[in-house]
Length: 546
Image (cartoon, rainbow, N blue to C red):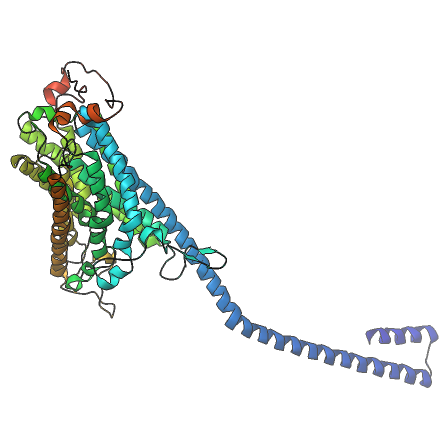
């Protein structure tokens, strides 16, 4: 229309005054242009309304379908990411726990006589291998089979690794894990992490029966331990069994002072009592001192290092900031208790004997570690120091008691894992970081145990202590009695203990090739070690038999 006006003006300028006919013609042209413009505007308005209507329909679609699908996709991604973090965390911690076997092997070898070093090393290796097969075939199913949560006693599914994932019967496509709000961890991940605990518990027994048990017999016992004795205790507790709800509070054993260490310690006590002491142990005790303190110290550091998988890994997850903070608290408590236990035993032995006892320092560290394992996730750091302090006294007292009773435990497995395991379970309930004695945290981590309405449950501290006492008693009765029966039956068959000639000669010389783990010569015991330390030599040359 604007162009029409411009044209009209131009014509007027060119031709001068227009005639009436020309004006009417131009007016008609302008009217037609205006009408055309109006039709264009109406068409554009209709298109705009249609677009707005389509936009409103699209928005409704986004809200209901697209939005739901997007949220579900984001949740699946989040669950998967959380599962990946948890898997990395537990694989790492499980590997650390597995590395503790190196510590057990070094500690036990150094604590025993050189003539049996190869046998001790072999026994530790066989323990892991046999224990692995036992855990895979039967142990996992008994411990964590779904039935344990219903019957409260024992599981019955997952034998030989079956049903660990779903598989399409037609295509064979495997779905390893289903991710949802309950978590995104595969059964294989749990199997691996708990396997490390199972074989560690069995290895504890190895130290208590060292230097006089027949290797094939011990291997058979290790299989029984990992397939039935230990798994049933796990089914009662970590597997969701009856101890979870006892006294309407349940037990508290975060990483296994009772479930793992007391089980191993009381089983070691049964084994060493049935076997009897090594020949001459309480007649010439100086002949039975640790032959290689460097190995003992190396083993202690390896165990301490592995404990950072044992305890922090028992969070079983790393899916949130709070969980990460809990793992850090657990690591700090573990460190404080170990240091306190070590220095207290070291000072106690110096006060008693007037000499530095490196072996005692090592076992004091382990006593502190075992003592804090149950309560590392529900007490503050000051209580962790107190736990290690008392644990040191428990260890020293029980070690002296066993020697008084002439119970021969070459590595002090019973005082460290058995007696300190008992103390650790009790400390977990006594030192819980709930406010005063009225409130209790237990498995709730940073928060209190709650009523259904979300308020903190009051006056349950006494019930929690009672629940943990029941845990201690049941572990002693179950593991102690079954292990004692197993060792006693083996003794009746003559298959338990090596003969006297082999014991005098050394198992390495009689049964191993090469007949010595290593050869070394040592200078005369002079200098600082001889005058101030007990024992007076860091290591002794292997015994020779003429």
